[in-house]
Amino acid sequence: MGRLKRSQVERLFSYYHYLLQHHEGGEANSVSSAELAEFLEIDATQVRKDLAAVGVRGCPRVGYPTKNVIRTIASRIGLGAKHNAVIVGAGRLGGAVAEYSGFTSYGVNFVALFDDDPHKQGAEVGGCPVYPMGKLGPVVRRHQAKLGVITVPDTAAQEVATTLVEAGIQSIWNFAHTQLTVPRDVWVRHEHISTGLAELIYHLKQPRRRRTAAAAAAPR
Amino acid sequence: MGRLKRSQVERLFSYYHYLLQHHEGGEANSVSSAELAEFLEIDATQVRKDLAAVGVRGCPRVGYPTKNVIRTIASRIGLGAKHNAVIVGAGRLGGAVAEYSGFTSYGVNFVALFDDDPHKQGAEVGGCPVYPMGKLGPVVRRHQAKLGVITVPDTAAQEVATTLVEAGIQSIWNFAHTQLTVPRDVWVRHEHISTGLAELIYHLKQPRRRRTAAAAAAPR
DNA sequence: TAGATTGTTAATCGATTAACAATC
DNA sequence: TAGATTGTTAATCGATTAACAATC
Image (cartoon, rainbow over all chains, first blue to last red; front, side, top):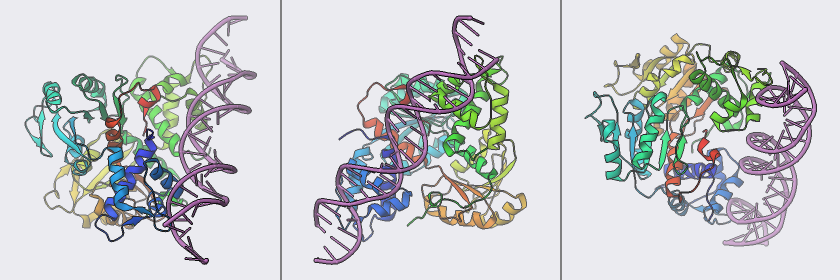
């Protein structure tokens, strides 16, 4: 089985998320590619290709076995495994990440937040202690955390990334709107949220017009 | 001048952001397509095409006039105009959005948050009052807010979207991991953050390997 | 069987990159 | 001038969609 492309991982995760929300505990034990395609507003062919890529076999006239799809995607992406993670920056955004219970269900366990603001140190956020930056190395090593989240202001992001890498972090989730220089074997995912705002502002300017089906969505 | 594509708007915004961070007040008054391309880790040809699309002319051997690029992008995307916005969901994520000062510099002015939790009502978050949901319609109309941000749990997102639309909101920034059904003339931007986490988890599983420069880019 | 849905190949479409002339 | 960089067309690449046979 080959390595999945980024877009495939994202779509597979959306299938997984949809099935948990809409099929878990339901009476239907199969789902068609057309149903998943409608939810994501993509072509059903794409869904069939994605499912084929992870080895799920469907059944003509019936669809794909729901439980099997859920289980296969989870195992292929790695949603079952437990991963310890740390958050640097105990502001509201860092707190939101720490508190969001959904992440726990994907196997991610936040063990600590770090912040240089003494007022935040010692507090608990989402059940996690807030430590000063100096403790980052020891805490990461003790918990063997592999995932680091950066929710500090843009100007501090590079320094934080370097600290995380030195402590042994392998993957970084960067919410600062900066590029990061890291060793090649460290994976970085940029979550430049303000980019989304720019797009919204642009569309506020545009004359109202008929929108494509792709823009409107239909939850089941 | 044609309508810009989503990907173009996102790249243009990144150029803008980069120039403000790295060139504003600096001595250099021009920037090359190669420099912008390196920052975004894309091809320089792409940058030249994007700038041509908004009508910025460069100078061979010199580059593009920095101030002109900044000004043109801002006006083309609409970053100069003032837009009132509201946030539904006064949890940590909603608070993070309200507090993030960067948005103000793009012309977005958050006028209020809404939450059904009585403990949150009456408080101030990022300088904005928190009201009960019942006040949403009047507040949106009074401020002529056109932009609505949804930071409530997934299960409540559709109901909130409907309420926002009824109040006259034209663009929705949806942080819940759900699709939304809205009239065709309402624009929705989905910010499914947990999708990013799924990608990170997947890469934690993968064998470490040399990464290409392109892989490090990862614009969302 | 008939018909719905999968699985897969082919065609299309769009985005990215390469090439290179224009030009300051 | 020489050379760096733009501007633009052509080529490539990949992703999406269409078509249709396979099959339960």
